[in-house]
Image (cartoon, rainbow, N blue to C red; front, side, top):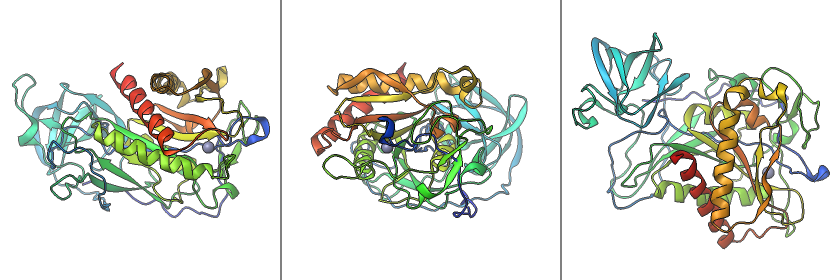
Length: 419
Ligand SMILES: [Zn+2]
């Protein structure tokens, strides 16, 4: 079972680090903070699970959150066999819980030496060290024998197959203070929800959908901009040179008076439904007006639960200039700082895919489709992660337009994972 711990009380009162992303109109750029979403359970993709629902019905909506708890002590029977990975991208963990550190991922067809087997998890040798993988995504038979995962898979993570029918199952994800970079978050008492697709054909990827902004009190707390304490290399709501920034900014207000946070939420919900229908699992960072998760908490959750992180925003200019993504600044010191160094090319590739998808859906694209920005989200992301600006204060944000944008984003996500 997976369990996630709630971040210990984070002192909600402390000042938090910076988020890079928040900028406000002053310089015409955007005002957003970076939000992060996180995703997936412990499989990078949630591998093949047994479908609980009928294959025909795809998405399901609802799902009641399940609280997962963790159990550190897992009893295992010693084994000495080989297992084959059946999920497309499956997480390898430091211990038998999805709340533990993700050490890496393995792909479908790879084999691992197994030294222990429990009800839900197996202990395997990964890069020469002891690690754990969910039984749900492995099989004891050798690859090529044509068997399906069934026998050896139980539910490793707590996936709850909710009611038979067409409801997607979901799990509540709480912040785990032992996750990498967790200590940089100052607001982490909120929870995210991981939805499992019930579509007939699974994509085996968890998409973190992060509705930008929407954290009460988030703008009065600051968090560190970079893990290493270095200064921001670009401006934004928080100027270049700063080492801390607003934990979560409040966002801009559209020309018609609608708060950005309200539109990003509506956008997130539309995207979620389309992703679930298409077979993707979705980690929803925020589904109400307020979630007590700052940009770092959102990012860390995404890092540990999802395969990619997409933060939804609208810029603070008033030109109806079109959509673009925040690319990783071409600044040597920034691109050589971890975890940026190991991930910046993936961030930009995801951004390019999303813009291509939006363009294909008929969405107007701003300039070349990207703008360099040093964001807190980017600075702490260990998975492909992007802040996508879907328009600005003057942009139409009607239901029809949001649908068009969601179609474009889905197309972009498909492009990214198929490439
Ligand atoms: Zn924003």
